[in-house]
Image (spheres, helix red, strand yellow):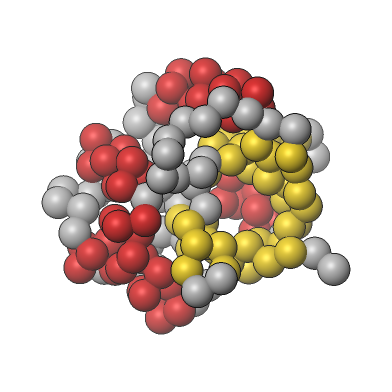
Length: 149
């Protein structure tokens, strides 16, 4: 398994984030958003595209590769902004333990197939099966997205 983002990801994310900020539908099935958190060192807003998945009325976000900076920023901040088009919401990101993450990761291939494809191209996953993604518990962070009161 590789660590850190593939070099091409930064360049691929820029047009994707621009489209999401404009509200352009990217997929009929998945609803990616722009996650913005303050940088843990600079405090400046840092953004990345993520695809929340819905399970039993709750939303979850899975880290796409080990060493992702956004994960460290979310851990430090706790609260972030999710944006798609003109719609923004402040939310709390609660990191799951590896045991709590396993069933969420198991559903990841069915709910976010483009995320699995990206992880396969980046060398994080080989087959992208539910067993393989579940086995990433403890290596990839999984966050529950909670609304703020």
